[in-house]
Image (cartoon, rainbow, N blue to C red; front, side, top):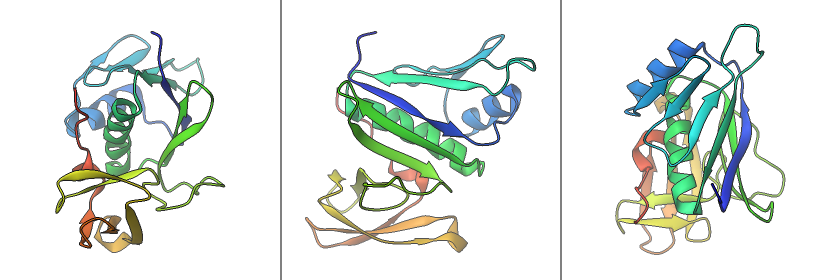
Length: 174
């Protein structure tokens, strides 16, 4: 597949294949479990592969033809992993190897990326009913005792809003 955006990163403490499939399904994702892999059917291209006792840690292969689609897919998988409290980080890269997005759960912020530690590229403002880029919102805080909800301030409509990781996954146009 000729792609514009690909995903890199790490998952710390991979659950076994059956547990991973179950947590993805619990998050509303449709998956196909193979002998050594899990394909996430709802995503343009997202496969957890090399599952097998003697193969070492699994890895993932994910890409998309646009940043919007890759962000949408990566956010859904990241939200599923975060809901299961699985530490991970996803880096999104353009064809030019430029870092264009970063998602994580309980992982340090990458150097050189400003903005929110849980979402550094965009947030969905329910007041504007639109996806806001990092220049259009201000990260306020994370509230760990409430499931790591993130508080933002939209610079467009001047409203403050909170989001749980799975709730702010706007479907890309097209």
